[in-house]
Length: 549
Image (cartoon, helix red, strand yellow):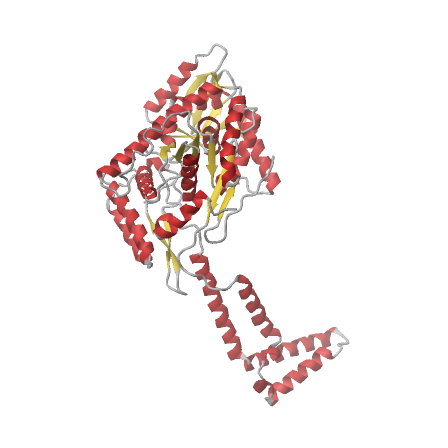
């Protein structure tokens, strides 16, 4: 396994991109050549035919979903949606597809820049940009961090945007109380003080509130609003939720293929995660992702299962008999599939569809989600830093499980600071000052002013201290007496410089406040919708990378 380094940008408006922008079209060509060499089946369907099915079905879903966004925005007279016919004629599966993906949560600008990049690449190669909404991801935090900038007393407020929900997929979350969004709006606007930041957020949240009359579903609501918001910057990609992809027939065939080869897949999956942890010297078994469970003839599948409105559950398979594999949830058999030589593959597919019709949902976990997109849908997938790291593992699984060289992917991220100037102070300044204050404990005489040193008592204590340090102790008792007396002298001399010590302690407190302020205004993790629109516009211009060497 080749371990690559992906570095989170530190400086304001700094962008990390790998490979270079000008090399990305070549990466698309490389992937297309690799796809031509693939010679394996997915649930008895040859790769080339299966990939055509995936692209056609997924683009159809993406087109329908995106057109729904356009229709709603147009009906509500949301600005920047008057040119929504820009890609109505672009759904052809033979066009190059550049794809990215993220959960529907309000992400930071470094995530949003992926939308700008796929939009730019799509225009450059006359292709299609597609954003995959990972609405099968779970909501683990129902609050957003919002900066309350008030000079040295600045803080970060935690403002609730959802009721507390544990392990519930975004696609299942709904706003049942119409006042929640208004309370969220009020809380954020109260924390923000910069007028340009307030305006961006108010513009965005008003789109959300307007759309909430059409849908209460969280994932759709915030996807629609984010899509409409990005149109202001000329960013117009197709959108498709994982929930829609997961119910297409090609995806169900992919699910059956992995299930039929569950033991082999799980063995490879876990082996590659262990190798990654060993090479990166990671002790946590949950990083970058947890292993799939293996216990006797029962293995965990890389998919979630749940019933509509319920929380996500792990899905398992009993592989004691490779010809008949049962899938299990919470120690109960959900159904079985027949995979023998004379099996009826269409029967397995119909059984799976019947389960879905009863309200059961099957969704991919992280690695198989991007595996499906990279192998069978897109010509190039663009990751952020986090996804790029775990897809090093995905590459190795593809090599061993499918026996092919995986399609290459690109990585991009960015950092954008708030519109406040940080103080010219570093942690080194605090460390240096702490060292001075500590030294004042042991050597107060070094910091005494000339006036204090002229004091007869001070002069006597300094002289005695020098004598004690210079004197050679002949036994342990003498050493202890000298040490105790030195400590007494230092304590007495410290009282002489007490005002200076307090001054330095106040200076340390001020430095630490400034560092705290800096950490707040340079944090890159705030939601994109609180940054001034002009700053976002400047950042998106960089996705054309005309300024990059």
